[in-house]
Length: 356
Image (tube, rainbow, N blue to C red; front, side, top):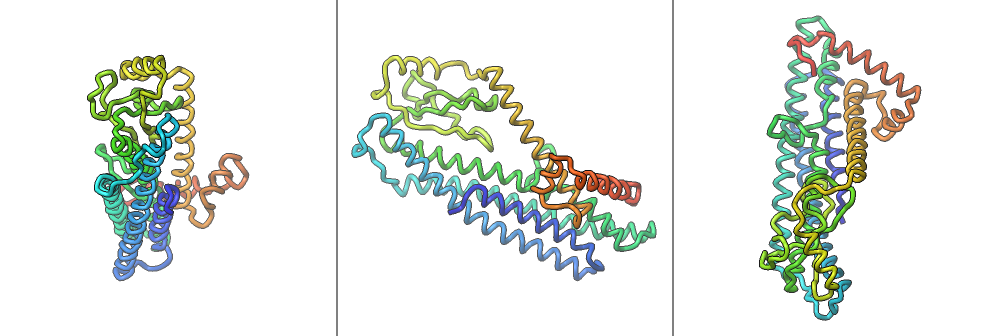
């Protein structure tokens, strides 16, 4: 069975293969024939990635949808419904259509990322050849050194997965991690909601998580009416997941098995203003976790830069992160080598004055 981690690993590995392909330009003379062969290899890597990611994503969506439906059934039983009175059959027309719609949405993102990855890798190959030729001809730099410098300049960022509206390029593995998590959670939530509807249950509860973001805080910890026909509760118009890495879900809420004082409390809780009501302690903790994620992301970006400039000397990411955290002698020497070589690359050798 496919897992979230396995699908994300496909993109990490594909990015490594593409960047290694670009790096291989340093190994020999750059002929038109060789350049065309590298471009064909890019297409082959992307085609393999798209096929595997699509297949595994379909499996993950299906499993997550069924898990959400099963969790809804378990929630009904815990609430007090007799198991024999619950319709657990996954009606093909309703459930298959719902799961397929989520898969179609996810596959569109897969195709979009594939197109961007292919275009970025091909652009780097073309640009590396151009820069190496110009640098070698106009500055007298050896062809091998000119190629090394061009590749190092171009390979210091992750392969693009998506280009945002403001022009920012998001690395493929980071973008697809969000896509996979989001659609897995969406399948789980949709399965749970449809199972509730199938059993005539209109009220659902969105779980409350103490350490969460400002947006999720507005919607969590409430009971909603799916149809909007129960005026005591807000209509379920904004469903989890609320963003890419959201962990919120929903479960059936059965009033007849709930104590009257709890029903009243939930009515009041559900109709509170839709504003961020987190405690100061929870906000601080959430910000701490975000800073930790940023540090890890910064380390990966640094590793990519070092791998581009020092491909033979830079270890794998896990070893690099460990060296950096302990500030070992090896890490300090690697830092110094990177500064020295990168300074040479950026020292005005680019004929166009570009700094990459």
